[in-house]
Image 1 (tube, rainbow, N blue to C red):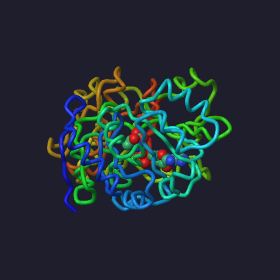
Image 2: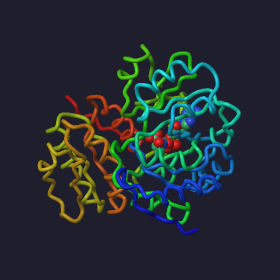
Image 3: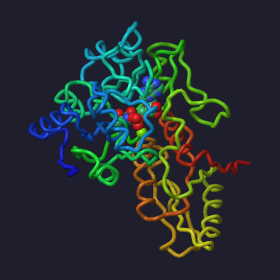
Amino acid sequence: MQTKVVAVTEDIIEKSYLEEAGTIIRNGGLVAFPTETVYGLGGDGLNPNSARKIYAAKGRPSDNPLIVHIADVADLDQITQGDLTIGQQLATHFWPGPLTMIFKKSDLVPVETTGGLDTVAVRMPNHKVARDFIREAGGYVAAPSANISGRPSPTVAKYVIQDMDGRIDMILDGGLVGIGLESTILDLTSEVPTILRPGAITKEMIEEVIGSIQCDPTMFSCVPDLAPKAPGMKYKHYAPKGNLKIVRGSNNQVVDYICQNTLAQCEQGERVGIIATNETQDAYVHGCAKETVAIKSVGNREDEESIARRLYQILREFDDEEITCIYSESFESGNLGQAIMNRLLKAAGHEVEDIRE
Ligand code: TXA
Ligand code: MG
């Protein structure tokens, strides 16, 4: 299959490209598109065959449900059942935006889209290209992140092309996304609303609107015998090819630890990548040959948004550079810090070296 790639920006959107993309979806094809979080791999959310094609293109297990993307709050009614009061309240505050909510599904949504579940995840993205495209496509676009299953989600079209070229019909290239980490997922079907995946909309922000909620206990640790409630969270995720270890401690301790271990790894023939920050990147003096170590700043510690935006891109770059061993600093503070650490822990298979005194 030939994959057509076209450039779109929020200011200049070629109407004919959107029409073409919409027609592809309505005819059962697949189109990748930008959102404010990461790129999505879209198909018709109401067509079981489209869902099957999405699973095949991603190499994703078909028990892992897809998020249905809408462009207008009014479209929520048709695909859900039950009391929408809390959902509507949250939609008023956070939509369009990086919040996915889980509702009881209506019969309109095929079980192929929801991985066999009787619930449906719905999101209205805060990206004009995405919403215009969703409208052209008929209003309901099922879309997981546009990566091969298990790889870091793409934040630029280059990585969509790397994973999806030849597997889908079209890619709308909208440049670098705004947030860089996937949406917050909030389950509204449990007794107490529950966050299943942290994102840019935090627990505190949601609690300001609807009062006390809870987080899935598997969000930050491997809890033995407990399966995460979002089926997708049980799979190895976001993983780079190199072996990633997170180091927890003060900046100085972490830099010293990583430098010593970098040297040891280089001596064993590994190619080492270091996820540093603007504050620390110049402090990494490790004694290895320059060609065998890549030090990259993920952003500014004072500006969590910069870190979120660049994290997946760095993991992908290390893959491109055939890095076999990665050390990362740890990020635990602040609001987005939760989402950043959740993804990093998954990418590292929860491998953390704690060197705090
Ligand atoms: O920001 C995002 O949410 C991006 C963009 C493209 O919108 N999408 C995204 O989709 O991250 P995906 O498929 O990569 O992740 C969706 C997660 C999976 O872990 C899936 O298991 C969970 O949402 N999920 C979807 N429907 C669910 C449901 N009905 N119940 C529980 N979890 C659900
Ligand atoms: Mg994903």
